[in-house]
Amino acid sequence: MKITELRAEHQLISEWITDGARVLDLGCGDGGFLAALNKEKSVTGYGIEIDPENIVKCIQKGVNVIQANLDEGLSEFEESSFDFVVMTQTIQALRSPHSVIREILRIGKEGIVTFPNVGHWRCRLQFMLGKMPITRQLPESWHETPNIHICSIRDFEELCNTLNITISERAILDAQHRPFKIIELMPNLFGEIAIYRTCLAT
Image (cartoon, rainbow, N blue to C red):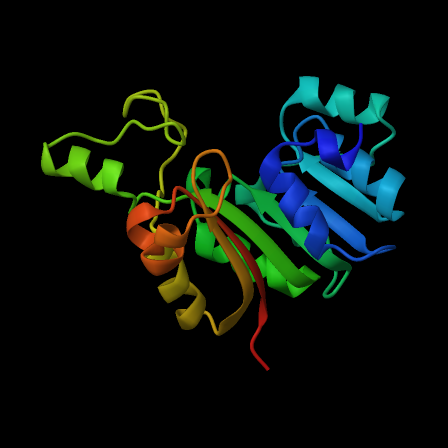
C-alpha cells in the first residue's frame, strides 16, 4: 500500500513524520499505515492493536505488532523510545485519555492525535434538541457507541495546557478532511476532525 492510498488523515500525518523515524502506532488497525511508512519513508516501528483479525493482517503486511489494551498502559516502553507516537480516532474510546496522552509523550518525542470534534455545530444542535449527537464522525447511537470521552477542540487544547503539552501543529478539517477558511476562523464550531502534533513543553 502507498501513502497516497491511505485514508486522508494518515496522508496528512505522514507529512509530519520524518524519514527513518521510529514510530509507534496505537490502535494500528490492519497495519496499512505503518507498512506504507516503512516502504516510502523507511521508518521502523510497532503497532499496538487489540483486535485479533487486525493483528493477523499486520503480520501479513510484515508489520511488528503487539496485542494490548491501551487502557492498561504503556509501561513496557522506555522513555523516548520513539520519535513519533500516533493515535488516530481512539482517544474518545479510552477510559483515561489524559493518562494515555501523558504516556504518549513519555515514550515518544512527539505525539500525533486525531479525534472527532463534538463542538461542531451539528453536534451542538442535537444537544440543544436533547439528543446525543449522531454525525458522520460519530455515527453510532448512544447505546451502541464505543466512545465514552468525546471532546471538543477547546476541551483538548485546555487539557494540553493543563498537562504542560505544547501544540506544535494542528489541522482542523471537515468530514472529507478538507480545510476551509471558515474552519480556520471558527475551528471549534465548524471543524469536524482535529489532528494535533504535540510535544512536552520545555
